Image (cartoon, rainbow, N blue to C red; front, side, top):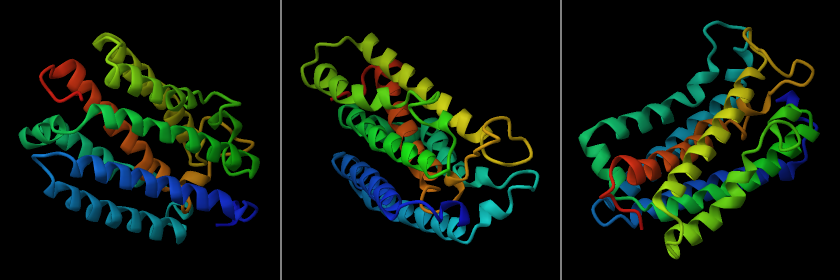
Length: 240
């Protein structure tokens, strides 16, 4: 944990609150689904278990101490969530579940990307992530968070925006996320590191910021997957 020793306590507290807010908001969205209310509790319990395991491993420097090993162990942080999303997207019951969720409410979830970007900037100031992971570098993901409320209001509440515009917004925002995820991975100080050698990305393998790749980013990806399925793949799905 030495790489976070100079970090103000409020940065960690703020990110714990961001993660909690993401979890609670997703839980409420799933609970609102008429056909799959029971899945909300399953999601909540499963997420708490996942977050606890990630927290314990990160707090004990499991990922940090294995940085020099190949294959790297840090993909274990995000693989469970990504596998879960893939299974839902490919299975018959998973597709029915995805179609029962509200694209409107999931669009508003992307607003969480604003406080995440603020935390990343604080982490850069504290020396735990490189500048390229912030809005002063090559990270423009904050634009997704800023525009999300407008898409929510104009696209789903007022229904002024066309389906094509909503599709384009989701794709563009997904690409913004992909940009920072790739930069973040290539900045982690492991044998295949390609970026930010002067100030590597340590934060995402340490507690509590391990929850960024382990839960918050997958939650954002999940929201895009659901919305794009509703808008593009399955036009009869629930988009309200």
